[in-house]
Image 1 (cartoon, rainbow over the protein chains, first blue to last red):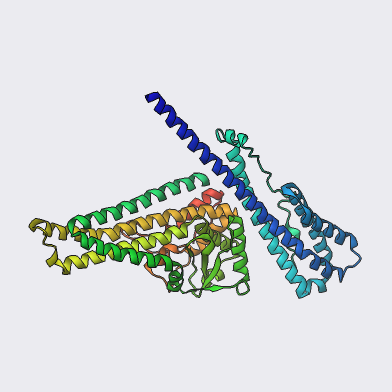
Image 2 (image 1 turned 90 degrees about the vertical axis):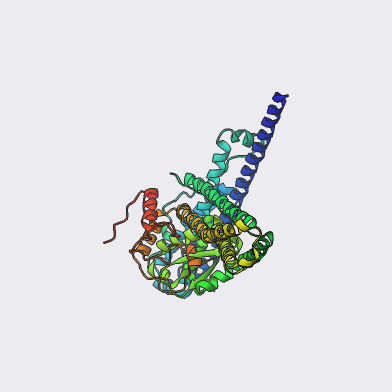
Length: 184
Length: 306
C-alpha cells in the first residue's frame, strides 16, 4: 500500500513540475513576442519619419538620387519585413542609408539650420534610442527563453511541446550607430 | 553574486519579511483577544480594516499630494520624458508611467502607484538640473525597476500595514488607560492585561516599522541591479548616486511616511551621523554600499570624493 502512495506522490510532483515548466516557457514565449512587437513599433515609427526627411533634403540636393533611392528601398523593406531576421536586416540597411543621407545634408548649412530638419533629426535620434531600448529588452527575454529551453530537464518539455529557440535581434553595425546623430 | 542570484535572494527575503509581518499581526490580534474582551478586539479590528482600505485605495493621490508632485506632459519636459520612455521600453513595460514633477531644488526621485499600468515616476527640479542624461537615465531606470518589480505595490501595502498597526496600537493604548473600569473580567488578569496591552501597543509599531525599513533597503539594492540590467550602464547610475551623496540639501515636502519611496533617503544628512541603532531604521542602505555594488557589477571605480 505504501508503495502505491509513494508512486502516486511522485506522479503528482511530476505533473506539477510539468505544468509549472510548460507555463514558464509559454510566458517567456509571449514576452519575447511582445518584445519583438516593441521593436517593430519603433522601426515603423522610424520608417514614417523617412518621407519627410527625404523631401527636406531633396529640396537642396535633388541630384543625390542614389541616396534617396537607397533610403526608400530600405524603408519599404522595413515595412514588408517578416520575422526577426528580415526586420533586423532592414533595420541595418535603414541605419546605413540614413547615415549617407545625413552625410549629404552636411554639405548644406541652410538645410541643417532649418527648424523642420532639426526637428526631424531630433525625432530620428529619439527613435534610434528607442529601437536600441526595445532591442535590449527583446534580447534579454530571448536569452532567458532560449536558456530555459536548453537546460535539462526543461529541455524535455520544450522538445515535446515544440518550443523552439528564437533569434536575437542583431544589427551588423552595432557600435557604429553614430552617423544619425550628426554633430553640428 | 550575479544579478539573477541577487534577484532571487531578494525575492526570498521579501517573502520572509512579509511572513514576519503576518506573524506580527497575528500575535497582536491574539494578545488583544485574550487580554481584553472579544468586543474590544472586534472594535479595534473593524476600525483598523476600514482605515486600511481607505488608505490603500487613496494611496497614489495621497502620496502625490503629500510630496507636492504634479503631473507634467511630454511637451513641458521633453528631455526627461524621452529618457523615461526609453527606460520603460527597455524594461518591457506595456505603458510608460506618467511623469510627475516636484518643484524642489533638492535632487531626488520616487515612484508610486498601485500597479505598472497606473504608476507614475516623480522627479524634483533639482535632480533634473543636477544630472546629465546618462545619470538621469540611471535614476529613472531605478524608479522604473520599482514599478516593474511591483515594488510600488508592495511598498504601498507595507505603508498601509504599518499605518494600520500603529492605529490599532494607539487605540489599544487609549482603551487600556482610559477604559480600565470595563475589563474587570477576573481579578488577576485585569492587571496583567493592562501590562501586556501596553507592551504590545509600544512594540507593535516599532516592529512594523523595522520590517518596513528592512523590506525597503533590500528593494533598493534590487532596483539598482535591475536598473543596470535595463540601461546596461552601471557607471551612469553610480555617478548619479555619487552626485546625490555629494548633495546635502534636504527635501522640503517630505514626511516619514513617504521617505521609503525616494531613490535616496530624503531625511538623512548624507555626510552626518548614522543613527545610533546602526541604521536599523533607515529606509535606504548607505549610498557608499550601493555605489560599491555597482562598481563591482560594472567593473569600474569612481573617483573618491575630495
